[in-house]
Image (tube, rainbow, N blue to C red; front, side):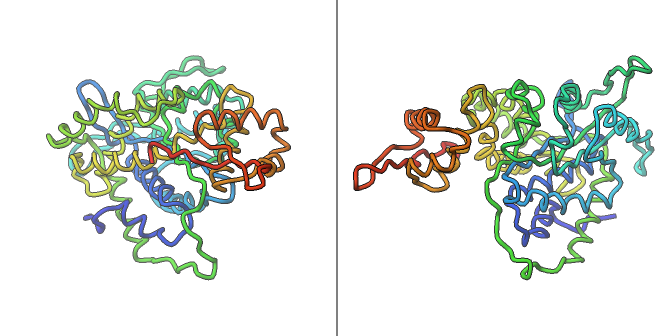
Length: 398
């Protein structure tokens, strides 16, 4: 059946426009939902390399403020009405492997005469990431890392059956967590590489808008029906994407300068930076599917994908500010957020706000470090006695 919409993502964002989550949350939920619909049936080849449109997307924001669950619920409603396999929100490693095995879709002969190989495609949709990942499940984190690249033959061991092989694994993730729980979900030794480098973290500190319950608009049923219809059409897509000369030109130009134009110098993100090209290729497939079913990526899909990634990276590198090997890492991140939000705050107020986390000697070390970094400045009120700290640093990526 023909598509009804000129662009699925743009229409979805219009559908959820009068809700409170930040715009980036809405946009990435749309990306993740489309990825879930595409499954492992779609791919693109560059030489011997094959890429699939699965993504690991995590919404990060303070509890109860950024409306993470509201953003995810709108997407979940659509996924519940198309034929995709979803994992339970809470499970064990063994349970998740079982879900992945049960998700197998047999080889299909399509209406156009092409064949879609059997595949194990599973979407994880978890509004509480720490509940899904649990605590201390190192093997599960390793499995998720391995599944990201969609190995055609994933090998694993079970106690009862020994070595097993699962064919054509494909896992897509949309989750949510808070800045203070990120260290629980992602242990420090996984940051900088491994699973964390494969995740796009959507970091926000405030909701996008305020809408009273009495001002909530009624659902546009016709718009929802059109969105669902086209998502079902996206779910029918299969086969190989191709790319145009215009895509090759802009991608090659970007890639040539990417090493000298990194979005951050924080070594904890070097693993992520090394995979930016992979993220962009995956986004290009998804953006192409958003527009039509021609399965072509060009300079337009590249520019849309790069633009989304750059807008996300403006705040993304704040995700692990409170996760480090220094004892003060988490408290320092909270102090920085407080000074930035206030613009200026007295030393006395800071001691009062953080007396549970940092007594005077520790607070002095944190503030001295921030001043030396040039992130804030130390000044005095007119009475010459009250010390204040003023936020002065401007993020180079904004």
